[in-house]
Image (tube, rainbow, N blue to C red; front, side, top):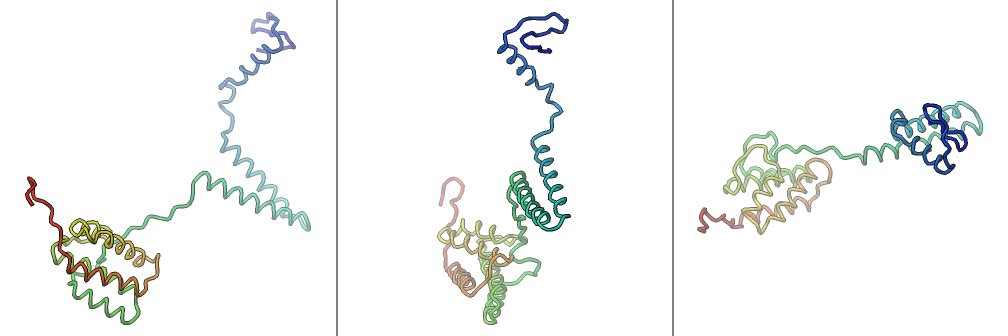
Length: 223
């Protein structure tokens, strides 16, 4: 719909006199029609184009010498920072890869709780705290299996063992959960083992040996 001054010319060529403000409004409404903008670049494309242009300018300035080269380097670093912020905003903060924990016992063969405790004490005496923590946690879980408070199941993780044992021994549920988390952090390298970590596990193991389980009520509500 062409506009000439205050005259709006229709498609057929017949002029129609239109007030100036109304003509502006009609023109603006026409230009806002989505059909005229379907091929416009998206916001992401415009941002990428702007960043590319700035990088080109920075690289071009870097090829110079003296002040021009220094200015180009500063510009390049600024553009890199902007690009990093844009990626952070678009993709979000980098997430640590999810850890996949093998079972508490890994691929070792079946051993008794007493054997695991003996190995834990041997490692502790030598100051090998990571190995001592691993063996002490295995002793704790194996001891619960030997008392049938846990079923012997290959591949069970420390978290699973703590959750299951906590239902039978609710008074120690919080300690079991903390022990499982400490074991995971130490066994998989996110925390350094020390004597305190080993001692806490050993004390818990001894407390669990004396603890009496809370039996679930039988069907029908009978104790």
